[in-house]
Image (cartoon, rainbow, N blue to C red; front, side, top):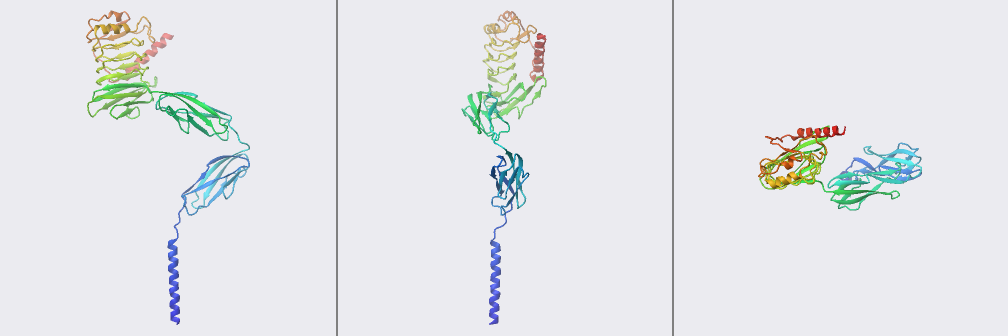
Amino acid sequence: MKSFFLYITAAAALLTTACNRQHEEEEDPVIPVTGVTLNPSSVSLLVGATLVLEAAVEPADATNQTVTWSTSDAQVATVNTAGVVTAVAPGTATITATTDDGKFTTTCAVTVTEEMIHVYSLDLIPTAASLLVGETLTLNAMILPVEAANQTVTWSTSDASVATVNTEGEVTAVAPGTATITATIVDGEFTATCAVTVDDAPYITMISQASKVLINVIMPFSEDFAIDWGNGEKSNIYDDSYPQNSNSLDLSWYSFEHIYSNISEQHITITGGNIEYLGCSKNQLKTLNVSQYTALKWLDCADNQIKNLDVSNNTEIFVLLCEDNELTSLDVNNNIMLYQLYCARNQLSACALNDLFNTLPYVTAPHPILGNEIVLTMYISGNPGASDCDFSIAEGKGWMQVYPKTRSIDNPYELYLEIINQLISMKSNKKK
């Protein structure tokens, strides 16, 4: 009987041990804390006001969610064990939450004031702006007084199809048109507006049949500029250009070369940039449109297949090199700054050349920059009407014919800057 009792006791002990082991195995693993955040991270309170801070322990399923609270200045703001902040007196204090597990910390900056300071003025800078499609502008909301408690601003646009605005006041030009951007202050609902006008980015278009196209431009440094080569590829001044900068005139030369995988008609578009010099010679161009670049001063489109060239909008152009094309007419009536014109070896008849001479600016009507201090030169050799035209029409306006042997455009940058500097110097001397 005693043996049987001992057997039963031993069996019970084994069963108890097995149950304990199984219970231990079924207990959840401990998940450690990895961080903690506070909401809000900063706040303004009036004296006597309270606010419950919410501490979010990370991860959300951490085993030990316990947080202890402390304040950097109990005379300004206190905090209890539940995260309730009480504003005591004007000033600033930092409330800190610390996790028991890992001692991770996060803070809330508390500003205590005796009374709520309200906004009484809201202005926008600027109040009007002109943008090109794709450009952005960040508006500045000027709130008074600067210590106002609630400086939250909401933004809206009258026409999102023209211009959009984000929560930071950044305006993006979408399409040509006008839109009004409105800033509204939450405290007092004051509003301020900015009138935005959006225009198309200026562009140059050309059609080429060449397997390799080379384009040179000179324009003010750091302006946006891009070339769409017409085959799905693009270039801009930031990725594959070779700028050479001038500190005196703040101009840069950018050179782009593009090679096509097959020879076909390519529609090339240049956008952006206040281009002063455009070099696109020897590119087998069939067409060239430069009408939107009114600041263009030098155009070299020689040795192409261009049949029509409209420079009527390019009123600042002073050098036009368009020889070795297929032009049957040319009108420079609006190009009052022009003083060098190379149009040799085109298809200009005697009548067409005489018409051209009649549109030339007079040297006797002083050049807008140079007055009578420079010789106006033309090169018309090789046109069908070169020997039969009446060049005395041009001579009567102060123009003379030249016969250059060679002309290099490999590096126009230094020559262009030299001429620009000479023009500036001549203009300065005239004013003295």
